Image (cartoon, rainbow, N blue to C red; front, side, top):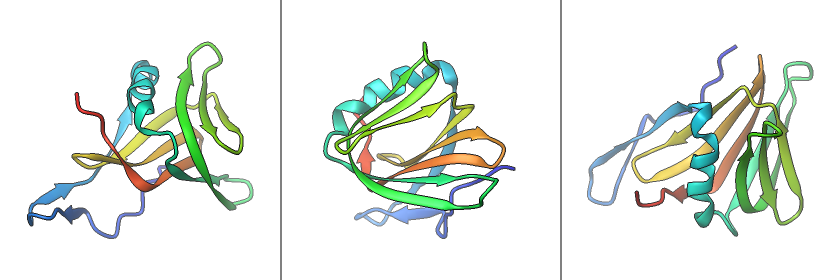
Length: 131
């Protein structure tokens, strides 16, 4: 089962009236650690909504946490979401998709298995670091 982000609008307009297209793209596994290390400097204090979607129960559990950082540990094959309240570990992710536009990351979708995923949505989109 392939799950896509719910987009009611395929684009947003910036203040100058130009269109900023949103895209969701799969992040290759060999880039996971480098990607999360690169965005981590902009993460402390950001609010994230983490939603768990499982095929067995079809339940959406959601909570909002204050973020410290996100990292991928290749030795344990785990995505670690460090929050003020606790550490949230996603073991053995199969695929990671990033929902973004030209300047911001809106959410991170972590696929753990067929119909089993976790959605990490930034309450206020995270500005991308300057390359």
